[in-house]
Length: 340
Image (cartoon, rainbow, N blue to C red; front, side):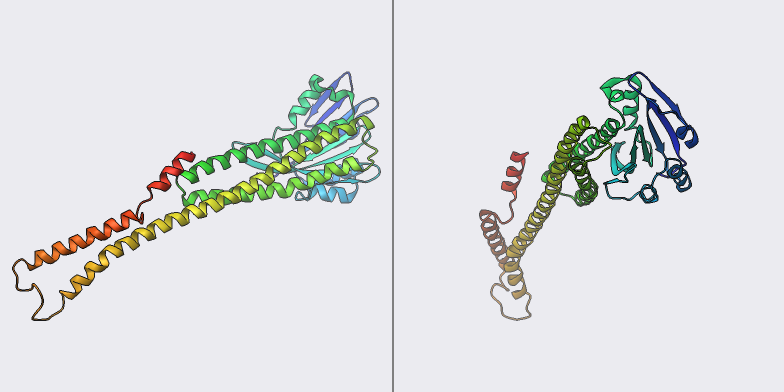
């Protein structure tokens, strides 16, 4: 995705009403009367000049604005005394593809400012709830709105992990049926995705724990209980992604084992062929020597007698190979199918 000029949506609400203004300017957002109201200013886009203007209008510390502009930040929460800064990574499933972006929050009295790179449509559901008055968000203030948005982002982690889990199950069945090279490539791709997601959501768990442990003045006491719900969700997500990482490593081991088994079968077959043909080659080599007197050379039936003897030897050796299961993979195939 290409980064684009910023688009601003303002949700101005209290317990009785919610006013929505789209495509407005920063100056209009800053000039809104917030007496008895809370403003959620949702900024979508990535424009450094625009960010500088936003930081000046909303009096955001330059270090926080630098973190917002640099969209590869580790999830964290920082208290700047006059505002609370929260940044984390959002993951979303779009057209069966996992996409991600950085989401930053500036929380201060009666104001919540969000900075996003793209509009995935995930947070719009919260805006719709504000407009309809569902969920009681309008009655609880800007700190509860921050919790609600964090809850949406964290719940979306689970949907992404469910998608990965489905892909792992498909590969599991496919590899057990018939291991192929493209399956290993897919496994490696999934492993990279899981490691990338894990790298970004582990700090989110620490972020929630810091919000719970530290005395953040921007959170009312009643709303702090909701943070425990986020903590439970993050624990579930981290456990799930750790389990998926182990699953992928296990599937890689199974893939290697099956490929090794396949190679062993090929080597057994080649060895059996050599086992059968080597005595015949030895006999043929002897009768290929240029000696005048050799057994059965002058006999008109000598050729057929030697050929028949070689055939008998071949059958005996082949019987020995089959009886010892050197060339049969039937037992493995039957066990494999019974598992599936």
